[in-house]
Length: 138
Picture 1 (cartoon, rainbow, N blue to C red):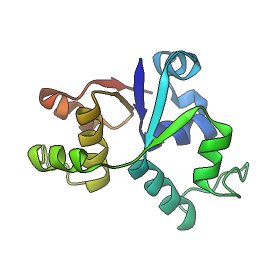
Picture 2 (picture 1 turned 30 degrees about the vertical axis):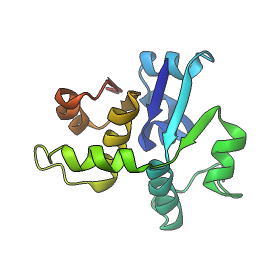
Picture 3 (picture 1 turned 135 degrees about the vertical axis):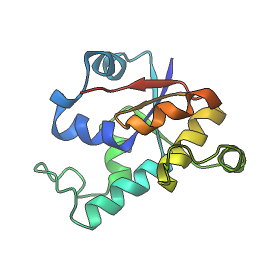
């Protein structure tokens, strides 16, 4: 199986695994699964790190978020492509969900037909547009 992991899943994995459901732990632990993180999620994490809104006790990002993901996880960073932008143009803003990063990640997962793993309750509204979602209800 292929999974796109939202930024919150990476942060929970690093800082508070108690916030991950058993299903998500199984997804992360299964080496047969291909795990991706959107470049958009990486951008969000870099912003949180640089702005001091996320300060890891472990200082794991000291060499950079991208290098950490590349060297310390089995996750692949998925770049944004023009096909993802075309999907983004087609999906409406639902339930006043205006976060552009979330919507880009959703569009990317829909386009690639990759199951998205997230703790964001707003994501479920996009299932009617083809989003496959594993909700981490911690």
